[in-house]
Image (cartoon, rainbow, N blue to C red; front, side):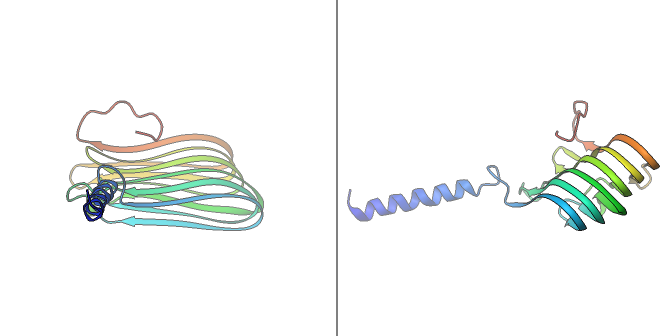
Amino acid sequence: MNAATLIRILLILAIIASAARGSPGNQYHEEYTNVLRVAGTGLIDISTSAVDRRSGLEYYNVMYGEGDFEMDSTHEIATAPSGGSAPTNLTDSTRMTYLGSVPLVGFKLIKSRSIYGGIGAEIQESFAVTEMDRIQRTFFGSRNPCDAIAMDVSASFNGTWTTDAAWHKIFEKNVRDHTSFQGRFDVEKLLKIQESGQPQSRFSGIDF
């Protein structure tokens, strides 16, 4: 085997390996990751948003305050091509503690918009607190045969904390949920809205 033939073989093998790495079945072709760990005292100003019209995803997460603050959070969005669609998964895990004379104000919305192929559902959380210990996980999934949004939260706080959820399909269904507490409370709540093309096992936690 001469050198030219060997080079051609190596080139072909490299092309095959590259194609395999880029295959939709092997990996996500779009990915966003944001990992934040912070501890200190002072001004807090955090915001994250994501919109994907291919899957119907809308996500907004903001916090603002001033005080003693500690947080460990991870946001991940991954999209994998699948024929003419683009299944998208979003996961958001947050563990935080706050103490301050100025209220920490926060708002989170996860939405699956029907106009863009979603299930017409949304879950939101808002709070204004001077003390809070909070563990929360949020999920958005757009993949056959299951579309779902979910929020799982455990919190102890002094202030006001509210969640709202809605699931609406014109002429078919209208589901709404509202919870609000003002004062000093410990709360655990799981909200999940799912549509599936086949029977699913009972939901437990955010992971499917």
